[in-house]
Amino acid sequence: MAWFFSNDNITTEYYTVTGEDAAHISRSLRMKVGEGLTLCTPDGRRHECEITQITHDDVTVHILSSTVCEQEPDVKVSLYIALMKGDKIDDVVQKAVELGVYEITPFLSARCISRPDEKSMHKKITRWQKIADNAAQQSRRGIKPHVNPCIALSDIPKAVADTDTALVFYECGGDRLRDIIPEKCGNIALITGAEGGFEQEEIDLLSHSGVKVATLGKRILRAQTAPIAALCAAMLLTGNLE
Image 1 (cartoon, one colour):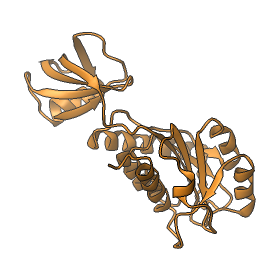
Image 2 (image 1 turned 45 degrees about the horizontal axis):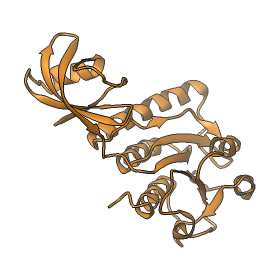
Image 3 (image 1 turned 90 degrees about the horizontal axis):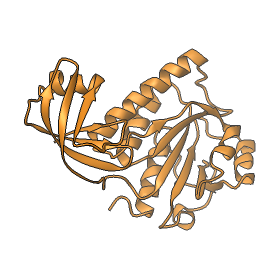
Image 4 (image 1 turned 180 degrees about the vertical axis):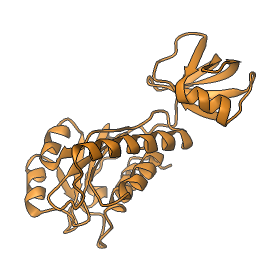
């Protein structure tokens, strides 16, 4: 079953798909009237539909049934990733969305080698959002996780202030995840560093604001590996990889 997202909640018997999705349905997938597809909406519901009309610009579907989308984890994980060189974050975004991340926020820390200007940063965010959208569709997510604008590390304490559990992963060690991630948790923030890790002053800043310092084991992971390992662990410990 083809899988798509709607930016609007659906409350009517018929719905019209427009834009890139309509073009993908009619031209790329070459779907026909009478074929079925799934639409997921921001209210967390999935709608099984049948195509009733295809025009040059849009596709109209008949809503056959609607249910709560069961693909989403019961914990919202916000991932904060330090900027990395090259296209390393591309793969992190893709895999994080497949694993169930709720949102992704890139940030700039002292040891970040990559320091794009505003124009380049905007292009990166746009590309990462496109990667996230495609990964959400491929993995049949109930939502399209949002890639937020880049922030400074000093902005993270305010950003995670209302989070149930906020963790920063430090290459010099910290608490074990099984000791600090509760099985039942509404939302979690995971913070991982750049290629050179974190300055001690940055760890102090975060820990003094209530962020817990955590470890991913005795081995030093690459910057692009750490966020995926942390996300997998968080999903497993909260029962979302079962």
